[in-house]
Image (cartoon, rainbow, N blue to C red; front, side, top):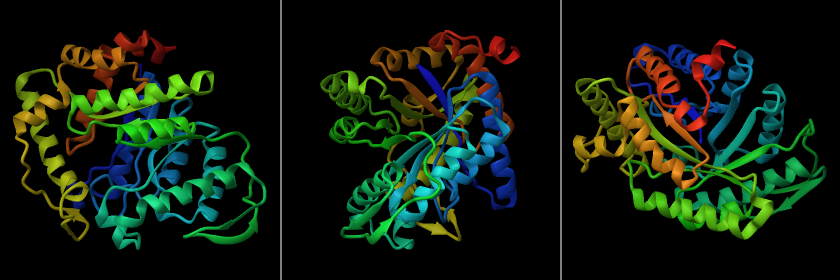
Length: 346
């Protein structure tokens, strides 16, 4: 089982500055590259301070310039917000500039606040995504492409420059049946049980495995990635402090994910949650290194290929760097068979 760092830009204080936020994320990517993490993950969100990253491909290129090995995943790019005729070329250029380390994760978009303010009603996102994905795949694989669909109509055109290699694509899906169908189409899968619904996780893994079994050798290369909020704590007091920070983060996240989408001048408002702090703490991966090993064990037993860890939910940048270092040294070797300290020194 491999591990990735989600470089999610949580920006609870405007005075901190976007330059410092992205500098912190770059520091995490550089550390992850040195310590042997498999990949870093960059999400796309607009018009708000929660998960703030309006330009994931640009940031992917920046990361590639400062690292040497680590893969760079977009998880996810919101296809309905882009024009595929120009976006396909941007993807090709990003793949070239990252020297093949880009994995393009795509999705339909989940936050009504940003989607609708950018002119894409949530009721249309699935249809728009399906058509956009078909067009993107055609533009990246065929030289002359024309289209006559519901949202796109255009005469034959060719994306330039041409791709220099096949670009890996990953689908963000939560619904188990959706996971099954996307796997059958040949996509890598990223999913999450959010705050810890274990039965949902079992169903998600089952959908992926069922599809791979039916595909035989054609699906052998496909991977399942699981995204989780995580942090390392050395004692009970530190654990409680970090869980409370995560609770405040989810008070913002839930507002724009399942809630009313109340945003004040770009700042997502914290709203009351039905789940208690204690209940959230039981479901997240915020614990000691040994407890982390115990909690990750069932994921390895399920055959999950990669766990994407989000260490960014309102804590100091230094605390996240320390947690990443501790995870790499004390937890990761139990699942990868590698020593982060030894490998970083070589």
